[in-house]
Image (cartoon, helix red, strand yellow):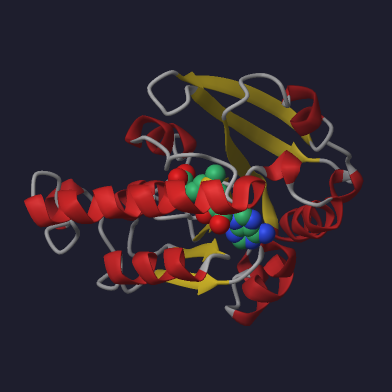
Length: 222
Ligand SMILES: C[S@@+](CC[C@H](N)C(=O)[O-])C[C@H]1O[C@@H](n2cnc3c(N)ncnc32)[C@H](O)[C@@H]1O
């Protein structure tokens, strides 16, 4: 748990040269995976800290009981979540790539209420039930996935699980490198969708902030 920046001394701190080197290594690993696996990674470079901060902007940190991150990569959004995480919140980050999971577990091993799960979002329902997250509901899903380009069957299973677990006043956010392009897609899944520009990112992009999941969320087409 890391309630604020002053209590994050056990976490990597900007300015530490070893951390800078590790971060450069992680970024180049991420890029090399993008060149090898393309849309499975979905982005050429990890999110900037501006993108990461924008994607968690609406989380109610003082009351949230469960926050779930989808597609954590090497952890830029994970870091922003952990910086703000309160003791009462259970945080689960899900990532499919084994090397990224190793990096995440190494970076965030000191945080007792953060759980790094090696898994696929098509198993989201089981992942949440296994950790007993489902019974209390999830306050926020923060997605770093290229959601519209996931296989349709995966998207449908993922949104079925989100529909099942998201609290009525909870929300979903998703980063994007295609500003506004998928607005209608997210509007077909959620009642209220707002788009926030994030110009300082490689490439520039933004975040869809979504509330009020619809009944047909698990059948929407991209
Ligand atoms: C665009 S990257 C974003 C990574 C990180 N969140 C960031 O903002 O830099 C998408 C990540 O989702 C992961 N991913 C893709 N498909 C997935 C799936 N079906 N289940 C879990 N993770 C997946 C990829 O391995 C990659 O790390």
